[in-house]
Image 1 (spheres, rainbow over the protein chains, first blue to last red):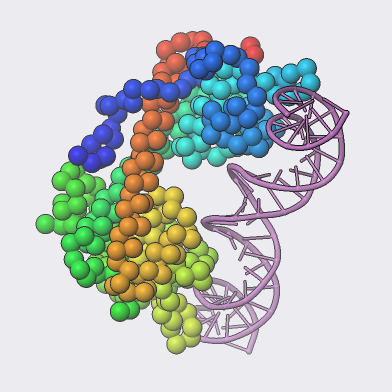
Image 2 (tube, rainbow over the protein chains, first blue to last red; image 1 turned 45 degrees about the vertical axis):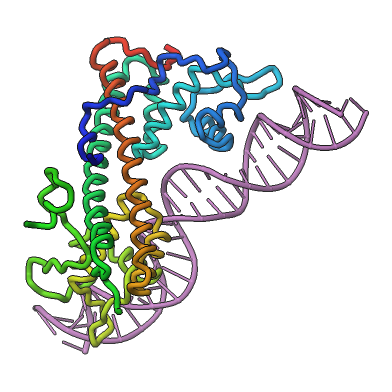
Length: 156
Length: 156
DNA sequence: CACTTGCCTGGAGTGCACTCCAAGGTCTTA
DNA sequence: TAAGACCTTGGAGTGCACTCCAGGCAAGTG
């Protein structure tokens, strides 16, 4: 069974790993993390995390009394969601737009929903493209497996 | 039996649009296309097509007696394959590597196959990631659909 | 014949998403 | 208390994949 079959939304991955509004307390039960801890959790670099805050993709992160960032579980959840959006190929600028809508409060819900739905459509399209690509790839791999002499665009 | 059916015993999109070694004569039955025609066929810009040739992602394209490019059906097939690889997110540099292997002839088959298989693994992973993202997206869209008051990270 | 359109070249410019730097403050362990 | 790890900032730099530009050649049209 190839991926092809799992693709349409029946088997939902057991770990719906994220939704920025549900707090997922991290292993150690704290609610304060340094930037390097967050980098480790999220797989994003500390540079990227600072940059995300600068461009407004993160709401302002709390600071310790000496000015160091202290990320909360909420921040971690948001970052996880951002990570998901990033996987879709959504431009960072669009994610910032979404973040701004969130900051504007409840009256932007309709807009946010529309944005997410548009993203959903994109994702479905990307998945279809990738499956298509998979088909081509499998075909080509098959030609290499099957024949000593794979027909290829070569001068030889 | 078309290529489509051998590939993956599954409903495969009717148009397995590509395999660079089988010539797909284009609608008008010619084997000579100007760069702008190719741009129209492939959706790539003429700039990109020239650039691909420059960096060695295209084998040298024939020229007319006045020096203009004349793409063949073979070229079109190759470009379609390149287009598929591009969709996978494979870096252009890697595609160039593949193109070089092709140019080196039959003794690189094993290597090419390995490259394609590695790509396949990536694609499968990407598909899984996207499906995961879809789950998250659906969950979030659901929260907007269900409640007037979607729980969101907002100050309001 | 002028004009427009389409193509050629090498090289420079663009936009995106980071990624790093310099200069400095803080924290921890010896 | 001193070394070394870790953090801060604004701004500059990087790598990728195009994308465009200037200057010029060639073919078709009124």
